[in-house]
Image 1 (tube, rainbow, N blue to C red):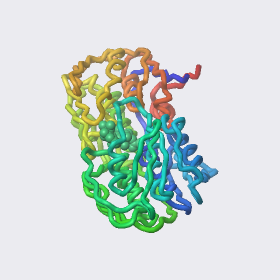
Image 2: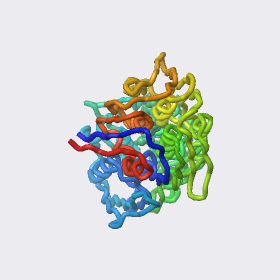
Image 3: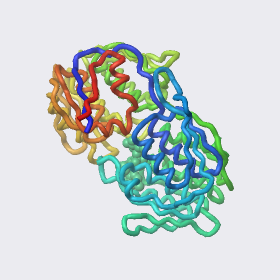
Image 4: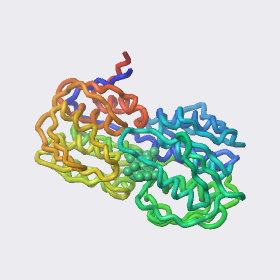
Length: 430
Ligand code: UD1
């Protein structure tokens, strides 16, 4: 199993090209199930989760062709991929595939909307909480579907003639369930209104792409989204938006190690809340014509309290990385997690590097230390794993991060990007 070895202590200087967003690419790829025409997506990151979803979509009948030449965006390597699903050949998404990535459960929306039925395994994914699917069941039921659980699968059936527009008010914000409602309601008869919808940029990106395919969605990016159902959708060409989690992670790394890095091809507006927290911690962040410039000092990091919230609040996907940054602050900070109940598994690993963190319920109290010392640590989930990498970059001596398959799910060419900025990072394959 691969490990990453880091020798900490170097500043980061140079350019980090930001890849297309994993969390936008996945629902956009799934949207290809809604049409028999070709959906072309540009700027698709090369990640384990994307490769797995390609396999899953292939099972349903999606024909995939990847541009022979790699698209070169700055120094990035995201690709253009064409998806064509002339007919859906299988409406079952099996446990073996869905259990590996929670987002693959989202195929339930397009399968149900286009074929009138779907049998989808209950999901797996990162071990960061119970992550139920009740909101998907309630939402699709509001569109007239019958949803039954049977032997670990959900059997979803649309009424004769297809799904029917309806009104659904989410009791809590769910990104995935909002994606699924957008896709399902686009092909329903009549108008659907979703209240308390997720406002994440990735939801807006999906709505934008669906509209380019002929859907009639308004209000994406606000809490109320209206979808006027259409009879069919066509193909389109769409560019995946930049990854705000990779952007924030990179900014936090520079704030921690010190240095001067341009984050190329990204957009401040996608993540002003977390970038504001990084600024308050002491880094300088400016908008440049090509993206963002981050200047970090690596010392005199100021303590900042954050609470994770749905967008536009501080993202849960940057919580572990920000905690990493706070381990070196000159004072006490607090990080409160409100989205997932079990998302502090990185705390014990950061402690192995010398961090002083105590947990009380959903809040971590971090007492900054002047230095971290390298140690062997273990990645526990996707975002936690990268917090260990950035802490390792700022630690004295050698850190090895094992179970890096978590990292490969969501960060494209991480070692290469960091190495080009002066970090000592290498992958060890045993
Ligand atoms: C997406 C992101 C993930 C991010 C999360 C929150 C992708 C591929 N993943 O995950 O990186 O951390 O948003 O920003 O885009 N919930 C229920 N019932 C449901 C569905 C969700 O109770 O039916 C709960 C979850 O357990 C969690 C909360 O709602 O506590 C938010 O989850 P959700 O927004 O659905 O996360 P994902 O879409 O899975």
